[in-house]
Image (cartoon, rainbow, N blue to C red; front, side, top):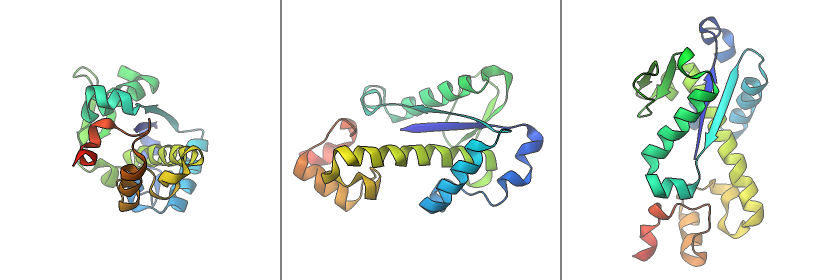
Length: 172
């Protein structure tokens, strides 16, 4: 699981750099890749990412793991010296200046930018995993619970990239 953050000056957040940006789920893979390059190569944009392993997610649950990643990203981008706009149910410690916005990745350009960075990096990881474990089809479904992925899990069983806490369907 990946969480990304993007830091910009207030005036930049309203500039044309974000013109036309959308939530990562509303873009094609090719569009996300173009945005990723534009965002990560822009010298006026700082960004950070945190990955939490499936093992940690299984130990502390997905919500805590996501917030752990958000705290890491917040610290890497300056921590308490800046205000953070967060997507949905994410949270930071109470004394960190922040606000979560429902469907923020659809409404707030800087959150959409972070969603694109996280999704592109996650998808790239899935393509790399596919080269080691091609029979699971990660290159095609990127680890999501498609019929193809579920069929492969039933046939070959889980590997380290799989969250054990989400595999109860295999016992049925």
